[in-house]
Amino acid sequence: MKIFTTRENLHNYLDERRLNNKTIGLVPTMGALHNGHLSLLDFAKSQTDEVVCSIFVNPTQFTDPTDLEKYPRPIESDIKKLESAGCDVLFNPPVSEMYTANETWHLNIGHLEHLLEGAIRPGHYQGVTQIVSKLFNLIEPDIAFFGQKDYQQVLVIDKMVQLLNMKVKVVMCPIVREDGGLAMSSRNVYLNAADREHALVLSKALNLAKEQFAHHTFTELTNLATDFINTEPGVKLDYFEIADGDSLYPATPLSKKIVALVAARVGNTRLIDNVILS
Image (tube, rainbow, N blue to C red):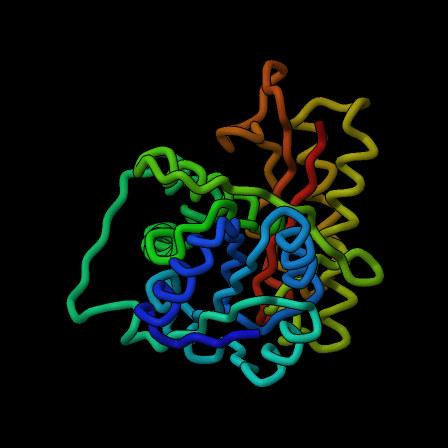
């Protein structure tokens, strides 16, 4: 695996690969890699010739400075995992390589910026689009791979690609879960044993909504899942929503795709999850 920390060296290397007609896949991450990330790499390897994984803890998408400061950064462990997974290229730049002083950014991504995660974390998706646009412009991937766990983020990135006329294809890959159903997340390392047990209520509530989907209205399903989560100690629910899978507005009988999304704080750790209902 080749490791690059500067944009220039990575760009030169990838230009050479493209001259040899190699297709480029990108898996953007913030590190603290787990099997969910590695499943993205596996899928990328099956779809492209050269797979780049980026590890960059992006400061502009954190709305809480404390969250940014304590975000896990086990780079040596991550490198070993990427090597074992057969990753071709790691891009691991410092912040100074990706941002200049007093840099500004705003992209009008419409209502997606203000729903669900956007409402709770104002400015978060501006930071996401800012860094992902930089990575897309630098790496020029043919396909970029993202996890379904961050469902809203994938829709936001799709919107950005449309707005900026980027040529990259965005692919959403299925959620990978721990034993018991907890969606894999870099933040799971913050959960103690009790928190981890309580956190299982999120995937259980999503599964309950999926099992009961044909038998209840959207409002009834939402109430059923919300009540189920609220009985679990140590869990503070931010939202449980049944949404149109394309717009994330509340689902209607005309929605072609319907997704249930949940966010909650378990102990001191905020977790998100979702399931496609229809």
